[in-house]
Amino acid sequence: MNTSITKPTLLVADDEAEIGEIIEVVAEDLGFEVTCVTNGSKVVGLVEELSPTVVALDLRMPGADAVEIIRELGKKECDSSFLLMSGMDQRTLSAVKALGKENNLDIGATLTKPMSLDAIEEALLPYLRAQNNSVAAVETEPVAEQVKLGLNLLYEPEFQLKNVADVVSKQRMRVCAQWHKDDASVLAEEELNNWARDLGIAQGLSAMVLAESLEAVRIWSNQDFCPEISVSFDGSLLTQLDLPDNLAGMADSSFVPRELLAIEIKEAAITNRNEDVSDVLSRLRIKGFKISVLVERDGENILPMIDSIPIDQIVVDMSLLSGRVNFQNDMEIEFQYSSLTSLANNKGIATCAVNVDSEDQYQFMKKCNFNSARGAQILYPGAAPTILPLYTDGKFSEKLASEC
Image 1 (cartoon, one colour):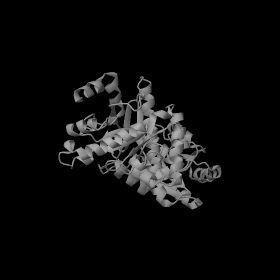
Image 2 (cartoon, helix red, strand yellow; image 1 turned 30 degrees about the vertical axis):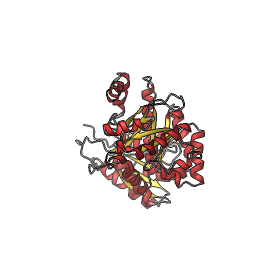
Image 3 (cartoon, helix red, strand yellow; image 1 turned 90 degrees about the vertical axis):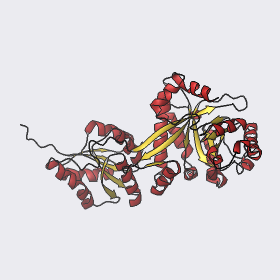
């Protein structure tokens, strides 16, 4: 019988080498075997290679930040424990800790820089005791739990009805992000955006959604299916001047052409815009991305600005018609929507009707000359693996033929 005691292992991920060296000294004195890394892009690979007992992870690192690393390791069902470190405030640390738990990772203590030697030792001691007693680190979920928590993406097909200015439109998918919480609740759309904004993780969440979406496009493209994807962005991100560069870097590193990515924003982000927002929108278009705007009501607020905003598509919510009696025969409503589609098309801007969930709505938006449509009357959103067969097997064409 082998009675040798294996030392607990620690991976320190911090771009400040001197911080890593301090933690290494303290940890080795306690009995850990320590490996240090200063680039975030190497963390996932080292965790897979070393299977460390504990990972001390700095929130902000070059190559990949803590949110990206947590997302990837959560998908890989990593069983290492984590300590989070940052010079940022405790609220940010707590928010990222919550994200880790949502991804089924064992997130322990948080350390705020500058940190004392005593604080480092106190954070590491529980894992040392657990190792010496041959007790696994505390698990937050039972082994039998099979529910996929955290981020889930669905893709909603957009049916092209007519092209704009003789330009043939590509098939487009809207990315529908959901966050499954451990209390069985699901956050989506505005509720998800508000949750992420309140936690201060809106940017990190958007990066997670975009990265997973780009990977889906890359996989589809290997099967000769190259749709555009439309990703909803919280309006608060449009004040970040480095957003166009960050998106360009992500698209290029995923080998996905930038013109296949459309950024969907709400009308309020444009009507309340400041100089930074104008800068970001213009640079997004210059870099090759497309921009869709989800308008309020029938789009009357966007019309006066249509010549001064760099957009490619206007999106109109057809669910607003549900409360209007006999809307399909209301000439005033038809005139409002038809005027919007006509003016937009004359400017080279496409129009899309969304939440088209009834036959009446479907026929009405066709009568108003919308260029494309999404909704239950077209097809329900599906996970990435379910989308490709709709096109390779001709099922999408069959579905549309039955609707027309």
